[in-house]
Amino acid sequence: MSDDHDFGGHVLDFAGVTGELATQRFSDVQLHLPAADTEFLQADLEGDLLADITKAEH
Image (cartoon, rainbow, N blue to C red):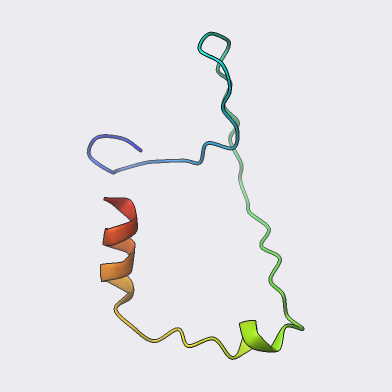
């Protein structure tokens, strides 16, 4: 995450103290959701989404 929060990314793995850093750009994302899971489908998603995002980012 940049200091000004204008851009960010995900660390998928990290090990060791020295090594080589590589990045990869993606033009799309595929999201697979558990469409047959009743608990997932009935989850209560009401709430303050902006507050939740702010809490997660700080």
